Image (cartoon, rainbow, N blue to C red):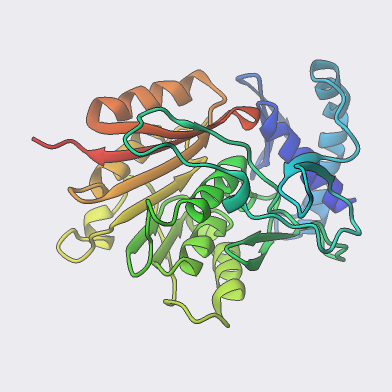
Length: 333
């Protein structure tokens, strides 16, 4: 039941809607419009079970509406994978699947040297379904490592969104082009920490940042997935976009080779602060890799503003997920 709810919330994200719980109620962003509902009286915010049950009620109420607007979803998600066979096959995700995994190194391709055209890719199955007593445990496989991610429905940042999958896959498949080994990497809006974990496995010195309310789950995921590996110890820090940057990250001390960001642009009021944060950290020699699902007009407006300040190049597109992956660098004078 919990797993199905989490998948339903992901569907809202994939089809242009976002659902989240707040202190005063719940919000659903659908087709660019925001609808809100008050919490039931007596709901204890510190009791996640009660909040989740209430969120299920809200989700169920709108399931019929989503179904009316979108084609019926298949019971089993299908993705094209490069499984050991004579020809490319389509493998169905099943709860009992244990050995059907794939590597994006085989199924994705990179652009020819010198080409400015973005690569068209598909987000491949790195998600390995498992039977679990916990609704919020998801299993992924990147760079030959199984990564277990704990998700939460309490915050947008505590769910793995398509941009994180696209960026993780691209980093895994393009290690020669973007070699993270022994590089200093900052992830902004790290969320569940999936991208930071992949960067750690690839040998980077990683600092994963997000809002204070997300840090507990973020720290848990990064610690659990890196504690027994021979890699640079990652750091988890608070970063509120546009606030206290000089105090918390003085440029005299902090310089990053790579800035990573995935699905940080959506329907929220902090886009100007996000842009200011990118400008602050992106210095000569820094490469910003940003993957985002483009849902709203504001997403494209942000992209235009970014292009007015930096050199931007679309490295890859994932049409089925509406995700674009961009390389952003400082303009040379």
